[in-house]
Length: 616
Picture 1 (tube, rainbow, N blue to C red):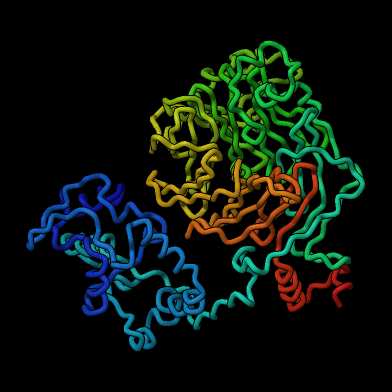
Picture 2 (cartoon, rainbow, N blue to C red):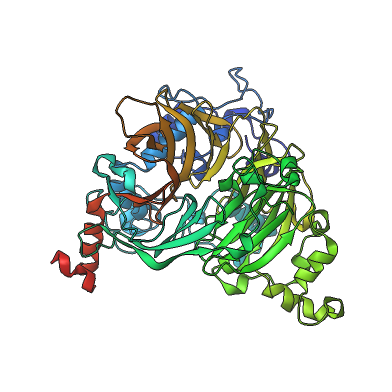
């Protein structure tokens, strides 16, 4: 029902779909067949856990009519599923359940382990057709070309048994009580702790990133200062806190290259801006125009009056690269892996840059001038961009063609693609390299999807998916393979599939206003939001932080605060949620038992550190 699977099925059957009676059409019937017919073997492919459209005939394919007269369309669901989205969401929750965790090793034994072959496989009724096993057929020894082709077709199209990885029984997975789980697996155990900020000056924070060893923040007001705090999650300190954190002696560093105020984001705050500021889009906001690299060493920014995109070093404010465009950048986003920067423009296009320092393997770095997109002229002034690309002590015009790859490799940002959406201005966007997807919200209330891998070489192919009438202020891609949008006016959060289908929607309620999504957990299941509380007599609490489980769309955690939330970030293992308030105060949400589990596991491995002395 979906490409490329539909095309592959048609190709397998000689240019048409198989007979309707043999096509997958009925989940309850298929389940009964697998339980009653030894020859009926089915596999739950990954799409059963993230893709509702696989159960719907969204492309209106003519799948034929069965012998009983039923015309095939959508797949029949079990009675407990209200729709395809509910079925897939239930499958996702079941896959992450404790029951599956406790029995997962049995499945590993059958598919990859000790019960895949031999006597144990026979006793477990886990024996398949001999041609599905690796090494059981010598194709070169078959002399008859017809039989050889039949054997190849059998192997290629009717399944293969995986390579046997384990000869011994696989150990059982640790229980929730023993393992280090995501923070909100047990919401009732989550506690809040303040981080010692020292005596350093505090500033209004606009953006924050959490690295393995520090918290890096950038202020939301001119002159846009950067501050860093030491922080190590789940590493207890001598004071008994379940983490280590302290302010650095020289915390604040002014970004000198940001000396020009961000006109697009400060025009409502500063009445002293010159006349050009009034012509810029008023919907731009600070968080959409700033990003901090994954290691906290670089700051990316846009929204300037001169249409530039800037890369600065956070430690000293030095400007590393400045890209000057012919169209106004309206927003930018750095991928979670730190290697891809996407920038949205007012003319409905998105530029895709490789940030070379974000690449884990130096060999991957872009070295060839031929990788540069021919759409650069669309965005950038030719002379200025050439000077940036071939800048040296000598004149750039004297650079030889042989010099280009070396000079190109020295740059930190390489434009590799330009995506065109043919809509209004790009309002906000997100990128996920794991899912090869860029999503964007336009000023025309459209939700747009595009593949990072598509339209290479500067092609302006249209977007993969376009969803109309999506009224939202923010968009994020989850690693659980769905897209989240948030509407602050209606306090509504919506969840879309990777194909643009609306899966579920949640209304936050009447007690919270000015809803602002903060961050998705790294694994993509939990969404942190904040909102203003209604004014109550003699109440000091003004803000509320909320955590939603995006698979069930249910609120699982809530905590009221005395100051507004500026930014949030999950630790890389999703065991800590660091929250920075508007006044610069830092709070950490964590389960104190997690750090004790981690220390216990390290001690079992013989790890010793002076920081453990207080616990002994």
